[in-house]
Image (cartoon, rainbow, N blue to C red; front, side):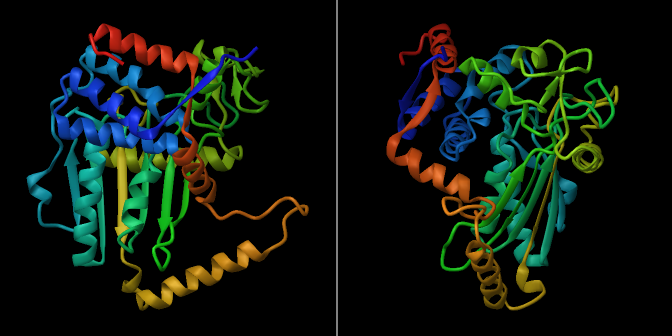
Length: 346
């Protein structure tokens, strides 16, 4: 029988997460950014990158891998350029990523386009949240990052690549949510396997292999030295390699499969103005026309509709904001255990 889940409000989880990060030595404002990042990800339905990360982050702090009071900054040599580098100072990933979004949005408005890397940056969480912020300012946003080895190459059996997500967001008119693609180049993000493990559920066939490279549906096999397969076979593998060469190498983090890899997120973000190519209103109208055509196309049956990229997240957010966020008992217990160790009342 699967472990039970309990449901909690976003405001409760945000407050609890913020207090936990403060107890770990994080300044209040940074703790709020991290907590909001995680809980907004749960709201969007991506529990693998939500509050399940809190004990993982805490372990990184306690092991000295994350400096909880460190603040990201723009490298002085890039302070006035369209291209810039942000130094995460081995602190928290979400504040570094939010600073990067702020700076490339400013530069894109000035220059038409801006590109940034983040150096010395720990886990930034759900990549889509950052391009959503850019689209809210009528910018097109692209973001990607590499990560520690979890994915076997096409035709390989040893972990070499990170899950290496790519996110793209395109704005829409009248304040509508953007068209958003946000996905790993692997068939699944690694922490989604942790969610299944916590729920006592198997992985679907075709997700993972065991340490011998054999197909498996046991989540534990991944954590015992197995690996994740690439999305779409050789195509996802190719995209994953490109994330290593762009996000990993340009940021100085190196590629996950090289011996000098810094075990951080090598992040690349791009923002540009649609009105560099045509009037903004014309572009947004064309985006809506394209979206309407997709939505009007027939589903595979009468009970199925065609969804736009980003619509599943939007619907999850509406449902969970109203009904609460389900947290598996194993995840909740890990959070409570951390609170106990920090002498913090839940």
